[in-house]
Length: 303
Image 1: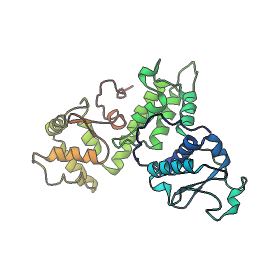
Image 2 (image 1 turned 30 degrees about the horizontal axis):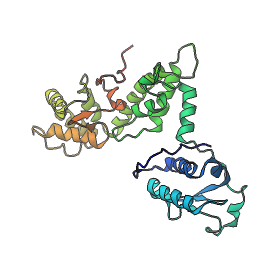
Image 3 (image 1 turned 120 degrees about the vertical axis):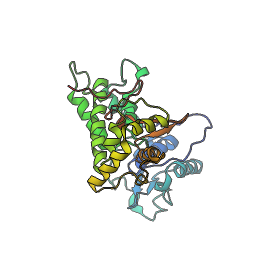
């Protein structure tokens, strides 16, 4: 298993947030980078009930390399590094760990292997060449919310739709055209899903139809004000017996009411602030809401 090669240079890495399902692939990348892929086939990992990982070294390792790996793990693995991220069986007082037959063999997909597999399924580019983007990163980016998080459900809905819309000749199971339709389908489902938790969200988004993002915050405010959105959002909240946006109640007629509504969308990851005091809406919500974006995925059309 080959990990990503280290980049040359002295650029410092910054500590980032690691999720549970990313921790093991990330750790394997670090081991491969510092010790080589052979070390991964020789050694093993332990994971405790809290998700903390320990890399168990079954062979010889130079102290300098061990220290460099340990420092990288502590920097990049967050809480999943644990108190003892690298150890030998002797240090763990467990001779059984020296037995290569002990443990469960698990395939760990790193970013490099995932990208290669996805390219076989969908092709490498979102068009004729790389200028349109690469399928592997494009689909994840366009299914992410304003917190830059993509759910497995949205991803699977998009790929299923892409497979269903594939036309002949079928060189790959899905292609870039199908992926775009898949994003449209995932957007519709995600907005419907969001409406289960926030019954007022459809009213808010429907009143923005035709708006083009990124745009100044005032464009949202003026549109909602002209549509009487705040009044109808409060009505929806009363009918559903579910609370409306935090802080909106009691602001009817107040000049800040629409700003409170915009803040509510930011808090749930539906919109994000961009440089230059502009507001953007990720494709995951924008497409279903029929909001425009130059060069973005087009909203679905009625058939």
